Length: 231
Image 1 (cartoon, rainbow, N blue to C red):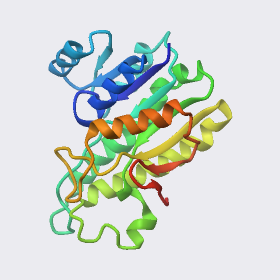
Image 2: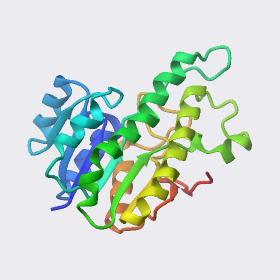
Image 3: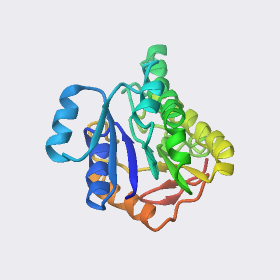
């Protein structure tokens, strides 16, 4: 049986991904922050394995490694994310950048390190980092985000995550572990952009289809609604 680890799996895209991968027969390993989230998940997905831990805590990497001690993972989806509505220099604060960087970049690193042994047990395993079009330095330089309302902290942390994706791809390629960045589309969620037009359910279906067809190559940076993105 194939297996998938999903962080931030209790709502939005994370929950939709868990539902879709479960329906496809994947064994689920889900990471959430609270006991109540775990209880709610198990009501809907009773066969899931759920770890309660915040990806930003110092103990997370060790706990994850112990939790997966005898597990083989085909796919990791680093979905846990954080954002702040502070799109201007005047409104942004250093604390916002620290919070987003901890979740969107360091949390991803901790997940990969904590799950690395489990990934190595499978051939051609896959790490999917849920990124954003707003993490593209090329698009930022072409003014794509100007006036969009997207926060400094979100754009900066996703750009950092993209660099992490490329660093991981360099290191893990020789281990037959692919690492990709995926913009899930303009999702209709709580933190939706003004031009949002895709449900988390549709986004999850699109991503699952790409995984099943083995279309994702290491170092890919892809939008699920428009195709390849520039780094």
